[in-house]
Image (cartoon, rainbow, N blue to C red; front, top):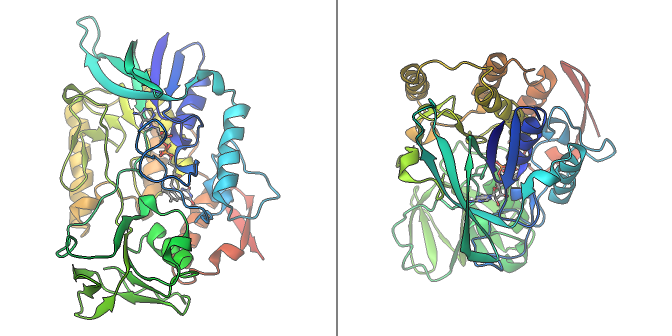
Length: 426
Ligand code: FAD
């Protein structure tokens, strides 16, 4: 019997647990979760900074968030959202969905909540090809007392939207207004009648700028992407990236200047695994490239250590569904991996191809249009069903049309009508 530790019980951790539980004669899983509740990102709190136990707030959820994907695309392939909900739903509905998923697959008995994993280190064993894993954890309400257990495999599902990636801009130290990161954004009231500069126009940056515009006097959306052609509320304007900050204003790369009371950094997050010891041999370089990972997922030296959900711009829950089954097929031996050298060469080739295509090194784990080829390959190797064509096409359609109509795209509903078809309705 293989004891497997799952780190985190957000969507990825629940998914890993669900697929480990599907093989009860092989696996004995335990999911460790800091929070009292499962759901990770989807556990909304008004709090910022630290929680009641002195630990950093994990979730970057904000009060008015509605999903940026329709529920028909978001769902795990083996568990649909409630049919009578609209396609774009509030975070509260996603939370309810994840709790239902947990109950449906009877995962609760295998989750150790209010538990912080502090340390994971490999224990080499001469009789085994792969190490076992010594895991040290504590109860969040009594972090002085440590517990240690040994596992045959570890699946890391600790999320990567928690630790802000802050830019280093000239003048940040002289700016007299507020500077916050989107991780701490909760609701627009704080921005009432203020002049706000939002830096970054990823999914969160744009959505938060629109949310803030309901209260702020003016919102300047500053970014280095292609100009967004969508109509915006009248008090939002676009500017290129920030050149520098002064006491009460921001200068943009085109030389123009705007007064600012608040600068909100929607500049993304860092990969952080504070619980892995150096012996785990996981490197995160200055461009946020994580190595040595085969298929962005399995540690090539320690193949019984894997990381779910590291890729960016993906269809998250369906992607976790495929990745977890891949990692589990490695653990149960049904998927024979290439040699360590071949896996590293594969990862290097993947990175080089990205560079040849003109991507920046910080996009080492960016999927976007690459995701379907990627998940289809994982599914083939793990001998499981790939993500349905209808889901792929609906995701691509939303992704392309969203930027053209950021205000109204969530008013349309969708229905999957067949393995390759969907329909839209108002
Ligand atoms: P998380 O949800 O972050 O869960 C990780 C869990 O690990 C947490 O519960 C945490 O407490 C736990 N953990 C971490 N470290 C430890 C430790 N040391 N010990 C024990 N437990 C630990 N996706 C969509 O599909 N649709 C959307 O509309 C959408 N909107 C989003 C909006 C925002 C603002 C953000 C930030 C993300 C959004 N996403 C969306 C992406 C979302 O992050 C993923 O869908 C998914 O929820 C990520 O799940 P996860 O399990 O990988 O990570």
